Length: 116
Image (cartoon, rainbow, N blue to C red; front, top):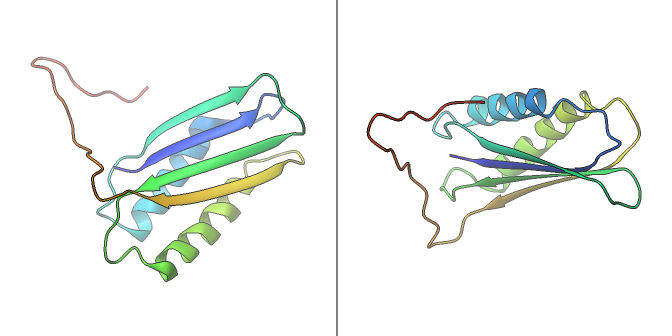
């Protein structure tokens, strides 16, 4: 279950939900074991220079090596930039979990996890 965070200056005209979908699709096309991407966007009201920082956190797995990461980064950057309609300082970071990272699902009886 990857995590995606988009932090950006609020002058950026961006549909973050579309970008979330693009990122999730690319990750799952490259690695079917990835699953849903838990995604969040943080527009910033106070900033200096128009910018966007996208951080993608993945679990460490043997097949997610340097070549995988570089190919993923290249495809993500090109696809994300298609959604940017103005000049902006762009940063993309792909990071991997540490040894003691815990991720799972907590379900409450009668409740479901819903996409918003």
